[in-house]
Amino acid sequence: MDEPGPNLAKLGEMHRSPLTPVFAGLQLGLHVLVMALAGVVFLRALIDESDLTATITALAVIFVAVYLFGVAKRLRGNAARWWLAVLTLVWIATMAVSADAAYLAFGLFFLYLHILRRPWSLLAVTAATAVAVIGTGLHRGWTIAGAVGPIIGAAVAVAIGLGYQALYREAAERGRLIDELMNTREELASTSRDAGKFAERERLAAEIHDTVAQGLSSIQMLLHAAERADPESPAIRQISLARETAADSLAETRQLIAELTPAALDGQSLADALRRICERASSPELEARSVVEGEAIRLPMPLEATLVRIAQGAVSNVLRHANATRMAVTLTYSDNTVSLDVVDNGRGFDVKVLDRGPAESFGLNAIRRRVELQGGTFSIESEPGHTAVAVTFPLETGEQ
Image (tube, rainbow, N blue to C red):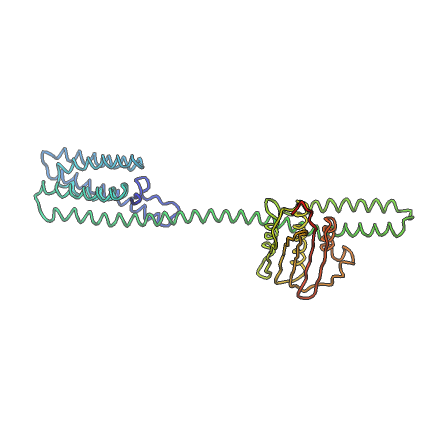
């Protein structure tokens, strides 16, 4: 069964559509048409005085009153169909006493097409056409013109009504698409705001890492060296206190960095976290991909967190220093170990920089310290066109 046309309450109602003036014009045109046809019946009854003049004029007024009641109440659903049934009965009564009432059928045709479902709307138009033809024939005699007139009117009404319904559906679909577009735009704006917040937090974390944390680490290392160089110095207590203060501040700074950096493992597997890191690093200038080799197993949370942090640090170094076009983050599970390799085709660097202390390469030294804390091994090799950072951690028997 076809979808119903717009009910009486929806005639001309297409908000946010460029076709709204069209529907409003059609609605107004239908009202004017019905009023004009009822006026013709009313005036012809007054002009052609007869014993039925009062009855015809009264029925014409009732027809108009019922029509205006339905328009004013903006009826929907069954209420609109009951209203149309009453209007039809008033028209049939008028048709019984006046051949001119056949004119009103033209307005009814549009109402049938708007309010009733197909095929009921087309059956109603056909029945109304038959009533108009029969009524006209009974009042004025059977002529071709009396039969052809209502039939042509019905055909024109059906053509216009179906065209209107097609236009209405097109406008409704366009309105739906506009609503979806607006909702999508709001979602994208929200996502963009969230992404901006995360990006700013990561930027702040990176700035603190490269400035404050690096400076505190350097101060701590220098004070520690001063302690060892002259343990009998009169200022040794102040130096030790300064070193401990720097160490505490460095620990707090790293905690702040950890809180600013979104938890990559939150609700994800280790492989998902690494893939997400690579997706964030990817750009038109850099192809970043993650690879998992071997059968994945669940690792202790501290080890998984360490692997994620190492990957973040190594990828950050590639982004900021390597000027690479390709990078691969490979996670490898074997029987007794789990390994992480970050390889890029960047410009490379002198690996001896690691021996010069954190002041020269804080990020790589931080990776090495993380590996040592978890009892793993760290290696790095670099030359122009190839740099590989590799870490390996042993697995306990219970972790396999």
